[in-house]
Length: 76
Image 1 (cartoon, rainbow, N blue to C red):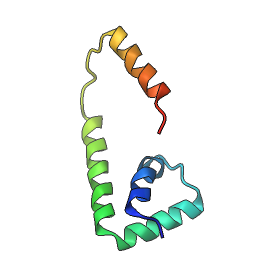
Image 2: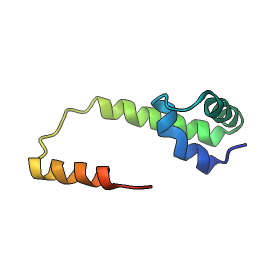
Image 3: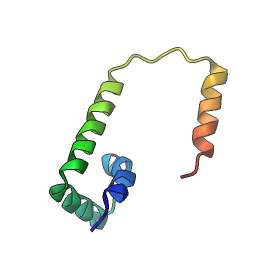
Image 4: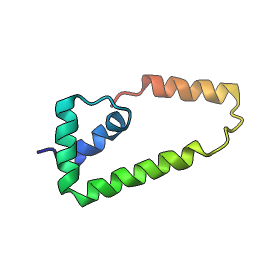
């Protein structure tokens, strides 16, 4: 059985459809038994839905490049 912390690390992959069949089964089993993780997933989906409704901001090119560089170089 996966822990809540393991589930939290898999949420992005789950939402983007990048989990294997086995991982999805274990993920679903955990969600079926854990109200806290279900609530967390629901909150994440609501946050993503809200963010999609935002208008793009005018980000200066140098700031955008710095952000992209940081995301590209980030390692868990």
